[in-house]
Amino acid sequence: MIKITGKTAAEISESIRTLMRHGELRPGDSLPPVRDLAQVLVVNRNTVAAAYQRLVKTGIALTQGRLGTTLCEPPRAGEQEGLSVGTALIDLADGNPDPRWLADVTTVLANGLPKPFLYGEDTILPALRQFGETWLGPDSPPQWALELTHGAVDAIERLVAAHLAPGDKVAVEDPCFLGTINAVRLAGMQAIGVSMDEAGMQPDALAAALDKGARAVLLTPRAHNPTGWSLSRRRADALKRVLGAHPDVLVIADDHFALLAETPYYSVIPASTAHWTLVRSVSKGLGPDLRLAFVACDPETAERLRTRLSPGMTWVSHILQTIVAACLTSEGMRRQLDDAREAYANRRHELRTALLALGIDVPSSSGGFNVWVPLPKAEKDIAYELAKRGWLVRLGSVFDVQGECQAIRVTVSKLQEGQAQRFALDLKACLGS
Image 1 (cartoon, rainbow, N blue to C red):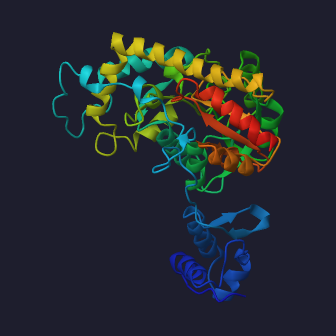
Image 2 (image 1 turned 45 degrees about the horizontal axis):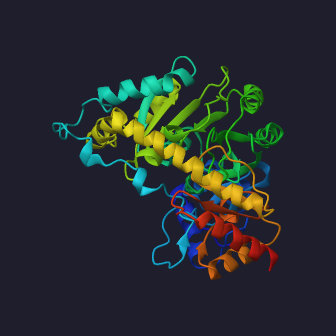
Image 3 (image 1 turned 180 degrees about the vertical axis):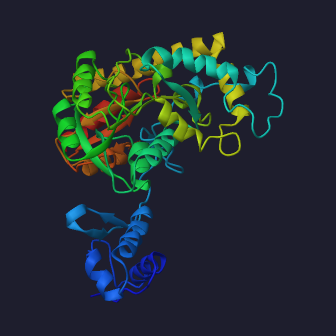
């Protein structure tokens, strides 16, 4: 047996960590059964169990019931969305909105910034509370509460931390948004990929994930990133029936593109679900730096969020709230959002039409900044050939959960006139080479 030492849970867990640092234990190694190690160390079994739980909470061990406890790599963030700084290529990989359609905050703050706020004051400005209740109320189950977080990913991180424990399984869309994958990974959770089609998550695949023990479901009802797919009413109803049989599963609907959505919102949250959340961010419509999300949720979940967003801790800045409220209530900004919605739809349609005209089959999308292109050849080879022709695209595999993806994601938000046709021609040449 590996020389694990210690008499307390802290000493035993630190001994294991030291053995990992020295290479005597490695990710993938199984730790001794609790009973066996307790006998060797002459301590209570509960002490060893507590030591293993400390390792699980830090994300370097995974407890799998009768299968025992296994060491794993510490959770790390994977790829991120954003500009590819320094590239000379035309960047169709960054996932960003077009800066021309984002809010110019200097034009909406006619009344200036708010008075200074102090610890203990209400964490949500009245104007934003009213807007949030009007915006999310009709799409929320009865008896709901409103909170604010620092964007959609921040909401997801707080929600899984509030309801789940490291090692728990979370059902996510496959392919899955980078921010979601990273949030689940860094929280120490296991992501179970649920296959999709153009109507959203597939009900049979969701049922299978729940049968495997998923304790939470995280899905995107509209403008899914990377595919641009949105739930149909029929698909949402089917998913709701599946979830209705699992009332204790946390349901998170990440409606991140709501400000610019082109399709109706269809809820998957059953009346029987005990814990649920609807998240709507303003970042895609107003700008990535305006990191604020409205969160509608059941009262118990709201209380758990409130303990971390309290007036004495990490509430969303009232200055940021003032800017967002001014934007959301501005007639000019609403017209700009309408124009942006139309522009993004036109650019997706232009690129898809150009690809279809050359015989490249591309699924339809109903929202977002991206076009999803499944490939008959290795995605890395295609991306390399496109780079030689001056294009930078995102590999579909970075969004992959189950390891079965061959695709590229093309961000169209900043396409210039004529670029869609040029890109389609170059992609056709790459596929034929």
